[in-house]
Image (cartoon, rainbow, N blue to C red; front, side, top):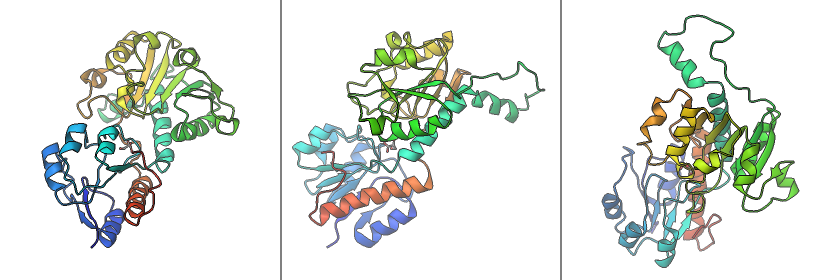
Length: 319
Ligand code: DGY
């Protein structure tokens, strides 16, 4: 008997084809967002769940999952939506999809930097609403990216690709991580042992760290004060790393010149003031949203399922 797999969201066609070939999938062709009760009900009799970060598998939800569930194979690199301790306590294996998102997410980070620095939202709005009148030397003047200092919080896989792409703009790379990386991974990036050490060196600040209780509201008012005046903040990791009220106050005062955001607290009901500010460049959590990457994420999740159900260790086990 092929294992029964509850798939919570619509996945790429090629991934669903492989699921149909190798498993008995319960698919979601309408891509509806299942509330917890519905998710638990749909999991009845299933052997595995393939969720996305849109499903919150809290301790309470995990406690209500049927005993038949043996593995949660996430279609995501982030796993902050899953209570790992609760899964572990129930003997449920949890996996993620690392590596395959790095290029797409780094591309999006560069887009956020450019979009925020060159006032892309404002410019696009002017053209679309026919408010663009003429050209002048003082019109829509932004901030140049080339040659500036980029500070990266979290020089993991995504952070390192972002650093590589940013070097194409002659940027000087600084970073903070829990520990200093070996020279071949640093590739010349300058290590700072604390966020406080890093921040004064950031003309641009990008977050690529994991969402944990330790990184929650990492960018708060005290730390923003350490940035150079007119710095630009971009975030393609998780919204929780930013204290929204503090960043919004800094965007209003000009302490932070602009922000490029792809992830937010409480998505999609983001802090409403982000929408009102002229100096924000806002994307709807699309860091990994390329055809190539979404296929690769799905295949990676299925590789983990295949390993588990053939008695091998899944490569991307996080619990
Ligand atoms: C991830 O994989 O964590 C992305 O944020 C999309 O879920």
